[in-house]
Image (tube, rainbow, N blue to C red; front, side):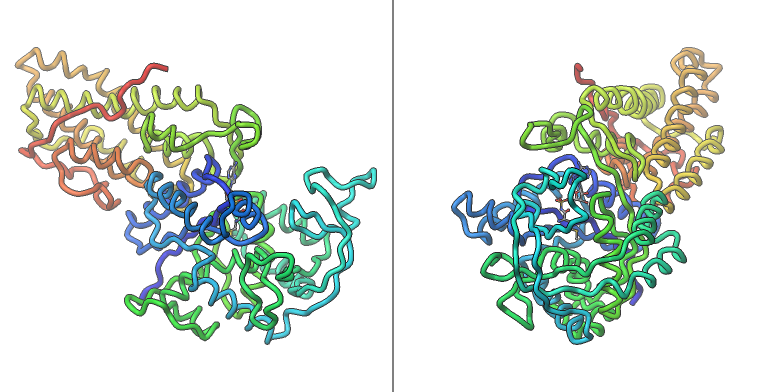
Length: 518
Ligand code: MSP
């Protein structure tokens, strides 16, 4: 059984509705997953929800619901959202599922038996709002705590701690000798700087049940539940365990919940995460995995954060972008295109409605849409939609872009891949303007030249459909259908010049991106 390319997203907190930030991360992971499939790999894409913790307990109580009912209802919205984004996830994990609880408990039991967990009394400051213990280091120069922590109380409480301190040097060495583990590089340098200049404090991994009931009971002391990160991070191995991945099953002595087909998934190839949760993934998670006797994921791909109109996205101030509204208005592919084209993975972004509409109009409607529409309409009008004999005038341009796109996709350089693809669109639009097929059509002596131009344009459209498929799957499928081709353009190997054969009858051209008034 060969190992699949295993890619995950962060699992979102279920205490609200999804927004642009959540959507962006999921689309990035989906494009990478689709690209790898197109390039011939077997891929498993995982996304899901993080459902335990005080905030969910409080949000449920505020609505007069028990937490499970509250999560079950919201999970429907989030699953519908994943579909709305066109995600090709192979599973959807929820941390309240039995399969997850089982693996969290098995992990805690193993790590505890191996001596990585101890119980001690904590006495100090605690932020109820952020559900976190604070130390003197968290005080500001004037002695107060950041208002973001809300009310800070004094607390004395017994809890379980996961030992981190002893692992610090090993982790530094690991990150130094595996430069591609944390990408982009500036995030890797940040984590290395943090690890070199601070002493790691052991991680509190429990809350007394009396104070927080909504969590997974600690198997060796059921007066406690495990606290968020030991629960959330484990989702990445829950699904491999459920699918009978042998690396996970042998480390945790777990049995798969589905016997057929068994999959080989671990270690993950990519965890796609936002910049705010790098420390949890780059420090706690590797140490947890080492304690579990499991190999580390190959890569953390860290994306930046979106703002809207230069300000933080926030429900309370109403500064939000609702992806569903955007998608309903201008289509899923327009949304996917804007977020992927606007931001390189790692950089922060700023959504503006004007910027979104400008890209829609310039790059999608006037660029891609216009090229495909005029190419196929002319083929229809001048040759009854019958593909003429092969001609290779644009083949060198197409081949260059095909090679570039392939290499960029292999490096997860999605923005650059789109730029490369658009260079072919621009080239082909210029070719139309230069060769002026509408003029050639008026002169019977130019019939052969017109055939050549029409072939080059139709074949470029076909290649574009293949290159665009991971990014704009709906549009790519439409281009294929308008070309009268069967199936989805979902195999990169089809991006080879000369695929359209003479005599092939194309379908009906129709605008891909109807113009909307700004
Ligand atoms: N539940 C944790 C993650 C656990 S992963 C084992 C969590 N949830 S979250 O809902 O707050 O965030 C989920 C993901 O969305 C994170 O990767 C986060 O960085 C991302 N984003 C949330 N807001 C964002 C923006 N404004 N912009 C881009 N991504 C952002 O953290």
